[in-house]
Image (cartoon, rainbow, N blue to C red; front, side, top):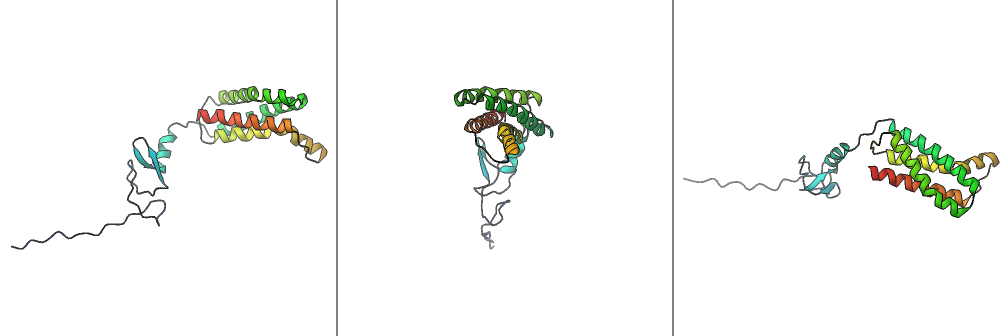
Amino acid sequence: MTSNPTPILEDERTFCAVHPDRETSLQCNKCGRYMCVQCAVPTPVGYRCKECVRGIEDKFFNARPADPAIVFAICTVLSGIGAFIAAQIGFLLIVLIAAAPVAGFVSEVALRAIGRRRGRNVPVAAAAGSALGGLAPLLYIMLLTGRFIPNISILLFAGIVTAAVYSRFRMRG
């Protein structure tokens, strides 16, 4: 009676699903996909791959395909109107104080126009529209005169409005 000893298998090498040149033993706790440290996303329930995390995040985003364009258009027009008024005022302190309420108004109108839906690209569209609209007076002057004449109050106004609108949309998701 001879017993066959169980053969010892060499460790099987596993590699990251995204980076096949990286050896790993870390697996996504949702789908079981192998992932390297760079691809692993820590969650309260363990490490997950970026695809699984993105799938979970997608449930929170409900924006329609036209929403970024609508937000861009509204933010461009309203920020442009605010910037032209600020250019007429010209007094730096008043322009700086007025920038925050203008940003609040612009973002609230844009959010209401899209029914407060959330989207991955909506904050970027809002910021791009606000920046373009905020710089509209400088672009208008540049088209008329053919030269760029920097106006610090308009540049600061555009920067404050753009940053505030972007943050407001990021808070929404």
